[in-house]
Amino acid sequence: MDWNLQQMSKLLEVVFENAHEPMIVTDKDGKILLLNRSYREFLNVQDVIGQPVTDVIENTRMHIVGQEGVAEIADIQQIKGQNMIAHRIPIMDEGKVIAVLGTVLFQDVQELTALAAMVAQLKDELTYYKKELRRRMGATYHFDQIVGYSQKLQELKKFSQKVAKSDSTVLITGESGTGKELFAHAIHAESKRKMGPFIRVNCAAIPDSLLESELFGYEEGAFTGAVRRGKKGKFELANHGTILLDEIGDMPLPLQAKLLRVLQEKEVERVGAVRTTPIDVRVIASTNSDMLQSIKEGKFRADLYYRLNVVSLSISPLRERLEDLPELVSNLLKQLGESTGLAVRAIDEEVWNVLRGYSWPGNVRELKNVLERALHLMEDDVLKKEHIWLPVSDEGTLAFLSVPTHTVRPLKQVIEEAEQEALRQAMQQAGGNKLTAAKLLQISKSSFYEKWEKYQ
Image (cartoon, rainbow, N blue to C red; front, side, top):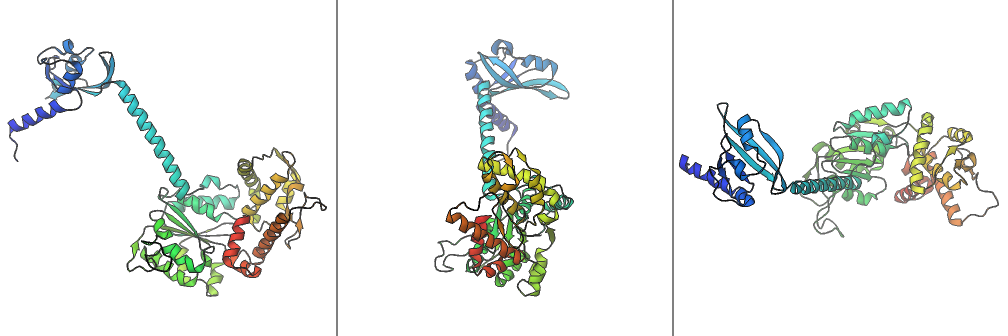
């Protein structure tokens, strides 16, 4: 409908009268022109139009604002013993004050205090849920948790921080235990996707028959045992976030072709589906395999390798950056102290000679295990050479330096230590390739990974 001047005036009058907030309009001298119902009920007055505002509202400054023409925002005004929050705004026409509008935001400051407390509580809850979401689906590690002063590590961290800002696919290579997953976490945590999910998939630990449905999901009835209404795969769960494909070199060839299509088309096809699902996922892949050798042997697709190897990060083994040992040991002892309750006050110099003289085939992960074992062998708070359990040589002769030869130890402990050493030797002989190590031990790939994870 078309509004005429009279109808518009009536509408404004009704709006003003029924506004929830107490409102008043005076002329520039403080004479009341309008007072809405909310304000009348608060003041318990009725016919006050035309009266001086100073006679109706205690501690008012409406007349002062009318004379000075300066607005007063969120001013505290006491009426009937209550502290209120009020606005007083001069209404100007051609540079002159023609009226003053007054509004009450809170009829009692306690209302504002309660609101502020509620907002603070909501902010605390939001912070908690953000942290919980990041803990469950986000990155656990950040760049400041990757320690080391060596030039190699510092340059790698600097480059990785730069890479994190983009959406480029990243391939992280390095021996087992060097910290490939830490770098993947840190890249996600510093990216624009940091509020999105971070999903990790170990391509070697999942049986080949299950890996496709685990990665890409499946539709209802796709196979016997499929849950009703199907299931999302890891790629869909990582939508708007990052997916880490760990041990990508062990992915079966048939799945490599499907992964290549996902990377090219930015969409996934569930097992048994008739349509594809678009996704927005950043891919980080990691491996301790020699990818070029795997390509030569026909175990890995060259086109997938070049699709993954957009940005390459190569993490140096610990034996090539022994200058990082002091900071690594300090950081790891602090972590272990929190989890075990065992603190180290001092470290004998001989300990450093032992640590620097070892090749560390298991890298930082092995160092952490050695230090944790040493903490349990200490009799006081000083770490000594005899507390460090290491193979005497790379051939694998073990030295139980802290345990007298005549001491009988639990059979379970002896078996676990022997099994752990067998895994270590196999990994060393296999050049860090877990699939080859599993074959050397004549156990399945999934059994090897289960045992490897157990001892790491």
